[in-house]
Image (cartoon, helix red, strand yellow):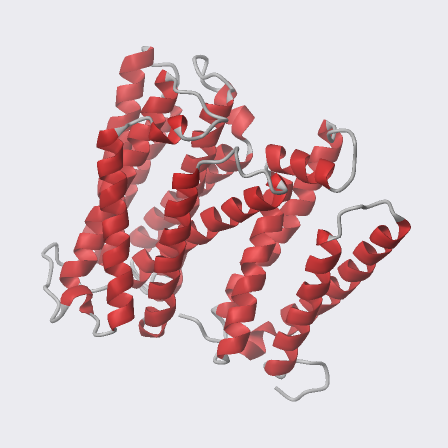
Length: 137
Length: 267
């Protein structure tokens, strides 16, 4: 069933999959999205327009989670571009979250910590599977 | 697809999957619109809780279709899905009797889904008898066996729990209230638990089934993620959830994940 042969990568990819699902559901389901939004340091609950945007964002997480299932069940060379995209995505996300936190517009440090851990995990998987750009697969 | 050249099977299972996708999308992610289609349904927290749950169950059914699309037909899927669809129809008819019949779309769609599944099962040519495996669960892996026994015990406890208190899901969750509609949803989940027990007994007798273990893994991963999402957004306030349900989901996830990773090389 699982085609990735490196056990450490399988564990890391599975953990990343669950994390993507968690953040996906947090953004997609209204009660969770509302609590999450207020927890980020906002005083007012999100209005319907913002909730729609959050749902769209949540679906991106869920779609990436489906992508990670595909990575786990495919030979590693078929997933090279996807893993590289995930590394870039996590890197840019980490920077954005860090700047928001540094500016003080976001008081909760959880998104910064999670996105930085996500970047490190994705990088480790990419290195362990030998998928970094320039490597002959 | 489905490792068969039979176009009828391919079309039947494709359409069944489409019905599951439709209901998963509507019930889990567009709950308000779904509830509005039923005049006597209140758009309250209890109904939303159960409708989302039922929608996520449809994702599990859909995962089975996808699995067989890549890996080939598996008798275990039909052993689980056909009784589940029949009980679903019984459950919908019971709700129609209670409300006087307000929306027949669901009944029609589930009936069509059952018919398509039966056609696919019949045309697959697989024997209807159960071939006994050499060992219980069809594996010599002790840890995987323990996990499968654990899952069976967990489901039996769920069924016993329903007889002790049919409304326990609502009584244990401070956000929910016991309503007639909520009780009927709890009955639907009880029906599903019976089908899961049947699927596990089938695996105990004929050996583990890749599609059933994978479907269980999809369900457990989704519910574990939602549980963790609730924990994350609760910010330390753990008084609002259902501890018994959280324990059941966590145990189920650990057991199913153990079984999945121990046996996944064989399917």
